[in-house]
Amino acid sequence: MPNIKTPLATLALLIAFVMTGCNVNKDKPQPDAPAGQTQAASGKTDDVAAERSKLSPEDRALVEAQEWCVVSSEERLGSMGPPLKLDIKGQPVFVCCKGCKRKAEADPDKTLAKVEGLKAKAKAERDAKK
Image (tube, helix red, strand yellow):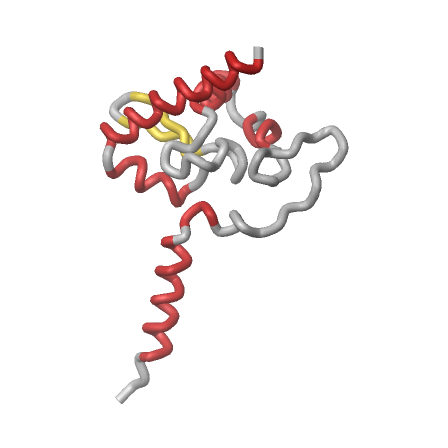
């Protein structure tokens, strides 16, 4: 009879890795920001602007209005590479990574409501800085 412990252990490890989602490097110490860059509140070097610059001007404006991932709301859009654009009921929605895509699409009404909340939060933060 074949030994199935190894494939089951591998599968369990794979499932655990996938379930961690976007926060794989969340607790990993990050280096200080190079000169000319800012440090994000989480301690990560803020390369968000560079990643967002890869988007069209229209998408960049939408990302800046939303600011945070609709699923992993502690992740700024652009902190994990260029934000991914989804179409949820005809509305543009951005997520930080492929891992969040399925969750955002699973409950469209909840996702759209959360986007509106994120936009309001981002607007309030921008207004407070003025």
